[in-house]
Image (cartoon, helix red, strand yellow):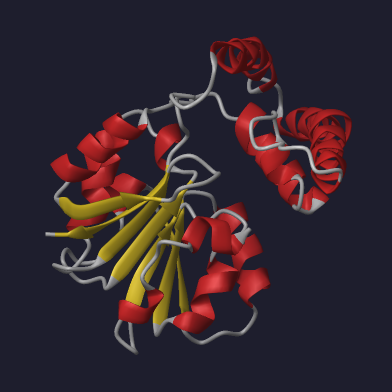
Length: 244
């Protein structure tokens, strides 16, 4: 799963003592794969509880720093970072384009920024988009529940929807059937934990925005990123650019 998100990220081009940030680090699942590859990693999240989980996950690593802050108050000097990434975060911020600019402002010239922004199903057929609109009605209701109940409901969705469809896609794939276009087939090799956390992210958040590949490319260019490239497979859309 880490490789799918970071396949286009230029780890090899970073300096040996690279310093960068994980914006919206959440439970630290991406930080755990990055921290040993860099000199210093700033884990940033507006939730103290999320940061506590990341602290436990990273253990006693001396090259990790933790900051309780949002994207509009990143506690790092402008033009100070060798890299940054924000995966599954920017589409939950009201002004996604402004948030993109806030991230880029912290990068040194030539430093990469990796983002994952929910796609607008611009590469999917009409029936797929219609199915999403139906499920989004559920998100509107579920996201307004108290957190404990919200987590219980989304865990149930992971058990009753994500897991059967994902494992069914894995079985179909072993039988030689192409499954890339099936709902939730991207999870066919994932753990149940990733299904559970993603179900909470998908259905438990009130604000969810979706963007076409062209719109994401335009936002990245407007933020000052150049050499923007997109990963070729799921998840959509993962993109990486460097500060000009």
